[in-house]
Length: 232
Image (tube, rainbow, N blue to C red):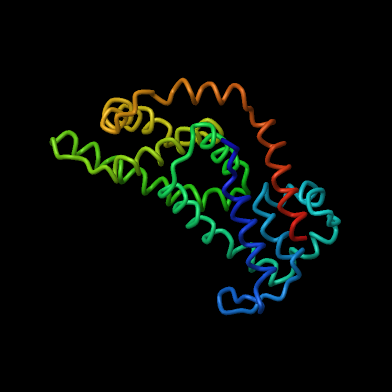
């Protein structure tokens, strides 16, 4: 299956909505009257943050000087700030509702690790809270021989695969808990209950070796370039 980048896809959707809307949208009660190029550049700030203005300039063909000027404009900053909780919610919904291949989780988590710091933290923290709460509940119910619903099993599997992949790209203090508590739960309880005969470890290690971050960045840049050429 093809690589998936969730922020890039979200950016594509938002740009499409913006350029096809019959009237200027309102964010937090304020009308947004940016050009499609300005709007796209504001969303692009999520990639690598302020230190990446040269990279964003290359992708959007917008001079760095102009990007710096735009970053002082209230509407440009409004779009940047608005995008963080909106994307965070979209990320949680995507990961909760959709199954991806091991390779796709590798790509998804790599992109998240590359995002501007405040955006990736805004995305990771509430998602990990949901994952940890579900994991604790499943451990407790299993220890007390209470049946586990298929919905919770599949939801845990999705969250677990994402965070297992994310720890490779962006290690955190949660790594110990994931390896000591949630990995045994996944391997010894969740996978057998889901009748999944193939443990994820070897497949994830394989894709980590064959698709390093340098390769992922090249693929991501190509996807972003295609997205921006359609709208800007």
